[in-house]
Image (cartoon, rainbow, N blue to C red; front, side, top):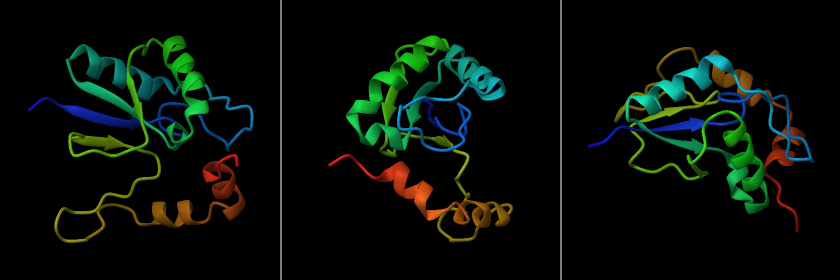
Length: 128
């Protein structure tokens, strides 16, 4: 089976300091950008995983950002699929398979929970 990695956009591949109504995307994070390019050169399939893809109006800005950063042609999704053998995300907390045991530092989860509710609402609310 081919390797297939999901990579989050905001906060993982691009700098993120909160949702902007103009759909702007932050500067590339060099360390992750270089890893993604390396994985592509090794033949690993990469999909950009972002909640932004829930709104089709966000997709052109994402495509432009990918083009500008040398990642043209990557798939964009907001749906986690069984094909993803790895998932890179700044908000993820790893759980041991089939046990429910949290692996690593749970304080990371506490930091995410402290994000003000209004920011989450702005991020996930759609235009009517």
